[in-house]
Image (cartoon, rainbow, N blue to C red; front, top):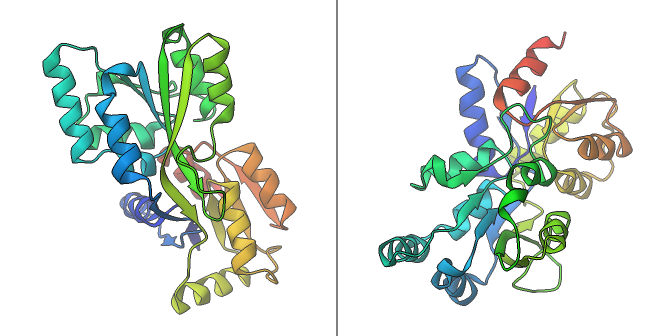
Length: 265
């Protein structure tokens, strides 16, 4: 049994793509994505200042889904027609880059890590984009906000990337465009997780926060029979800490996941 723990829309997309490769998987989201509550004012204000940004950093497909609305698309067209330079669109990985293209943005406008990068993260994105950054550039990072954290339009995450930008003399601002929450599972999802805990299930984990939610949802569960397939060493360390019996790492792309899953006995 392979369980997909990304937010529901992403997990279901992975489920369909894996099925095309002959791999059966179940979506069991460990992160719920919701609007941040700042859409009306803060998002519109950022979109209307589109020409002032050197780049927009979309930290995830969820950031794309929650910021790319009619207001942004109208502002994008208005900026293009006015003759102003459009901002670059930065994506930390292929999933986010694909989400941007599905919104109608040209691939030539998007910067992302090299396809053969060991990881898709801020560090490898920075290797691609750092030459663009200089004073008086202004960069806007579009990120999530953790449920239960102090309500703020700036959100949490990608602080390392912001420090690199500022060290090169540029300005960096944050805008929370979605909220990350612990999901409320249905009875069927609880039953699936319980079954997984008592079998040799494999959990595809792309977030340490998702694993924290798993502990919150099933605090007494024994994960020693299960495998965590982690897409980053930090996530692997979290999986080991909560007691997964086997922990493997792989790159967070479909081909790598398929290769790792099919190579297991």
